[in-house]
Length: 180
Ligand SMILES: Nc1ncnc2c1[nH]c(=O)n2[C@H]1C[C@H](O)[C@@H](COP(=O)(O)OP(=O)(O)OP(=O)(O)O)O1
Image (cartoon, rainbow, N blue to C red; front, side, top):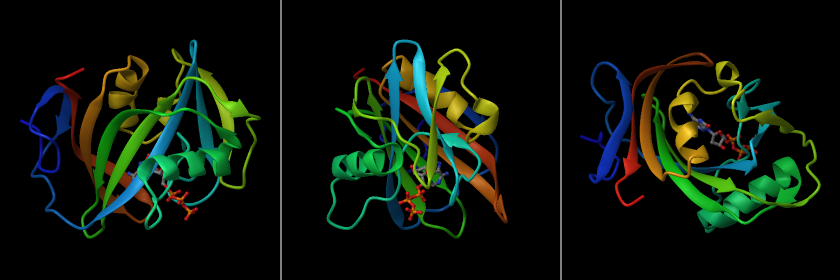
């Protein structure tokens, strides 16, 4: 059974952790874009802000009156210097007690135009898809990134305990959309 905040018609893929799901809160919307070409994945090494020193896709907050797609395209241009046709790959909810829920629309791109360029926020780097640096990413990425790579549309939720800047996963649930 999917946790609160996710659609009902998902097939469980991975779940773990323990305890109760944290209560509902206001939602803040984010995007995240992963470029996949053949057996390579483009990630960015985060140089500042949330998730500093971790590898991640390219993305950020959706601005007021901006569509999620427009926000994803803007952040990809700002952080990696490229534009790309984007395919919606899935949705994730990240929950930390006392903070707004982070609702992240995740996109996959398979081609791009422009020159991949380091920005003040991200240093882009290609990885083999069989050598993804999961130990230096958000901990739950290892559970859903295989679904993005295999083109299965997913939704998931991860609840974290926070101590200062350290986020520890408490409970998570990832599901595959039954229509994919
Ligand atoms: N757990 C969690 N919470 C919030 N955001 C994320 C996660 N895991 C993630 O992978 N992310 C993603 C979602 C976004 O792509 C980034 C965070 O965006 P952020 O850098 O804060 O937003 P910007 O708009 O680029 O920030 P500034 O330009 O204002 O610095 O991480």
